[in-house]
Length: 105
Length: 189
Image (cartoon, rainbow over all chains, first blue to last red; front, top):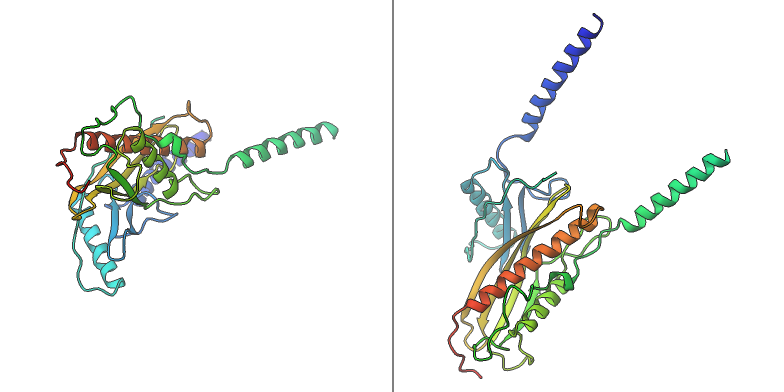
């Protein structure tokens, strides 16, 4: 008899955790910078030359290629302004869909 | 009390051992060199035989021992240079060389954790003619490789091995493309 409330509590806790985890995962990757706290998804950039930058955007599994491209374009626009320029030109682009099954235990 | 102290000392020694060996180390050039067995040495009659000089390798990162293993510029350049030398592409001279190569490590996608670590490397290779600056080849090569618990039980070492294998696969792929590249006979020699 005494164990029934405990079982109910565990049942509700599991469901609450599931709901919270779904909410925490959120939607597609947004315009966020990759850093130590968020190393997997978002954008990062590196300077290649005085006027040339490399921008890499990694989206989570529910992010479309088009959305990833938009984030890259937005980052390019921001970088252009940060460098005090008015226009940018895309020299090279590549889209890869990586295998999402990275953890094999 | 003595027994407890003895156990505590042993635990402290083990922890110290783990701490000292747990520092992340950078990828090593020898482990990133292209595998010779998969691609032959270029023929002496090829226009690319001893015809390329590496002018710049960049985009790498220094390894912070308290964080994760990375691939540095110097290590990547050394691996690329030795790979090209072994396969006959590298010029012995740095002057009057028909082609120049620039490599840029665009990204190194590393997993956060796992028993099997898969690393994706993205390197841009740009081969151009020294004389007129014409771009002969310009592409980003992607390569993936992994390291398992069988390779290294400790995570940082396992990641380093995965990094090295990914870069090795990347450089190997580039060597294969160079081998099959159709280049006109250079007139600058």
